[in-house]
Length: 86
Image (spheres, rainbow, N blue to C red):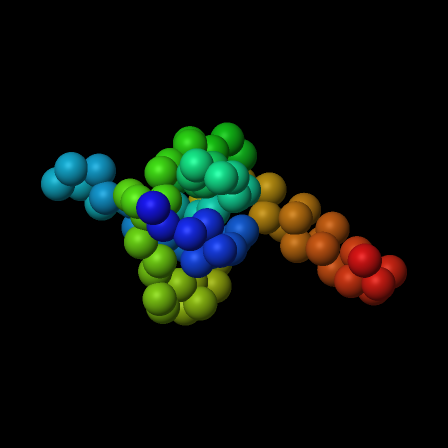
């Protein structure tokens, strides 16, 4: 079993689906898998950690529509929490 601590919300992953590979962005982490955005909408598909591989150069992606507007709101909310000391 793969440890969910290996992944973080907002990270890019590659999902291996048989002989297909899909780029995704992690929306939320859970014990048995993560919800991952694979398109421009805000919904995520539950994906097993065993099928996910970190995209090590994901930091190079500076602009994307993966996950729709979710990540913009998520980043703003986290910045506000940090300023408040949460």
